[in-house]
Length: 115
Image 1: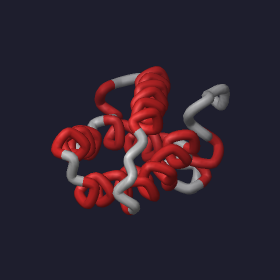
Image 2 (image 1 turned 135 degrees about the horizontal axis):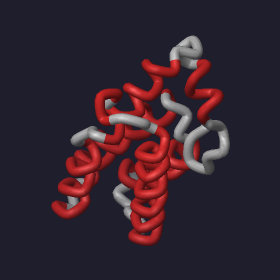
Image 3 (image 1 turned 30 degrees about the vertical axis):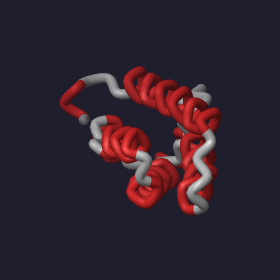
C-alpha cells in the first residue's frame, strides 16, 4: 500500500498511530470536502482573500494527511493569494495535483463505507 506518488501513506498512517481504518476514513472525508469547490468559487470571483482562507484550510488538511505534493502546491498558492498575485499556471498545476491526489485516494479506499 505504499507505492503512491501523491500520498505518503506510511507517514499519514503514523500520524494516526497506525490506525488504518481511521486514516482511510480521514482520506475519504478529505476527498468529499466542500473546500475544493469553495476555492474554485473564490478564484472565479477574483476574491484573493477568500481564496487564501480556503487554500489555507486545504493546505492544512493535506499536510496532516501527508498528501505532500498537494501540500507543496497549496503552500505556494497561499503565498500568491496573500500577495494578490495569482498565477494561472500555478492554479492549473494545483488542479492537476488535486486530480491525481483524489484519484489515488479513490484507489486506496476499498469501500464507500470508509468515507
